[in-house]
Length: 302
Image 1 (tube, rainbow, N blue to C red):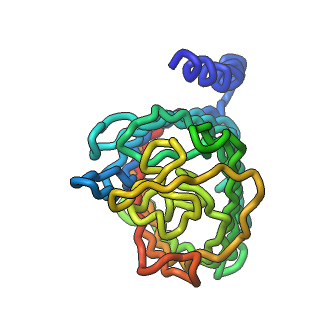
Image 2 (image 1 turned 30 degrees about the vertical axis):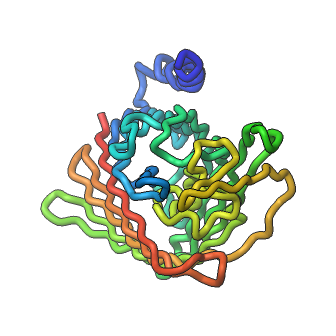
């Protein structure tokens, strides 16, 4: 925990220095408090059988932003499973611009400090570099995003530790509807996206939400379920099988078509952002059956 606090301090200190220097000027310094609600798979044990169910994930957040650069700290809590409570501290630093007339752009790095909570699946990927761009000049806006997750697997009695990574890509089209009514600013953005990736491991990566928030993530991942919290084994139906860490890359494959609807309502300093997605599988890499994702984000600017 002391290490987490030190890293957070080092990330925030340049912003604080800039704020102190600009305190007598018109500042572009912004502070936000937020709350993110979504789902996370949790381990469910019934006799000798092991499965996963979706449980509510609650993620409060604090954001400091200055001229597009920002630092975000978010602890994440799971409400279900045998050990409900905090399962991750996430710190994100990056740059984004959403106020330009023609292009939206974001580039960010996230480090995830896992607490080894036994309720949620283990992931060796505790880092992500994510970028996304959308071209707003056209009525139909093309958009593309990519993410690289990386980390290390743990050594076990049957395998050695090794590096781990996954790459994901999403591309598609959408259209933004914006209007004001009664002092409230609304935005609705429907989009259709094609998602793919290497998808070797279970992960909490932003680029592959259909894995990290889905109880059926085993349909997408290639190296087990993470049911035993990183011991290199998966347990399903009372049997165990070993999975060995691999440093060579897996083939990239198309996973699904995503039908996505994002919306926002801004009332003064308060913003509500709901998101709903449907994932239609494509080929064997997409598993079977349509899966869903939802998220509700609340934010207040001080």
